[in-house]
Image (cartoon, one colour):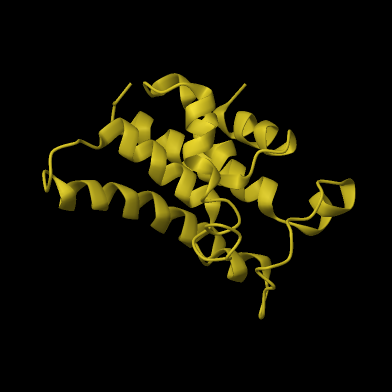
Length: 149
């Protein structure tokens, strides 16, 4: 199964967009799946359901940090930010935006509304499964191209 398919499968199981992308790469990072899911959880729905940066893009950024990041203050920030921007910009080129509300066509999102139940109707009206798959595919291609694994 491709990472794109894995991410879409995780999303279909009920994980949010950020979790789904991050979990599709769990085998590449030195962190337990449960902890990775917790780490990524807050970024779903455009960061806490606020409809800001797409959670799928945030999930990719989390994985980039775990693979290429470091824990030394200030070390290699510009190079790392370029990696994140490369992945985000490719997503934006494909989708027109990296902002959740724009991707969903929401002009005045009700961020206080609870997340909708995952039903067939939900999946039919939302591009989220495809966005999750796309983010995972872009990230997978980036990692492969840069010969990290």
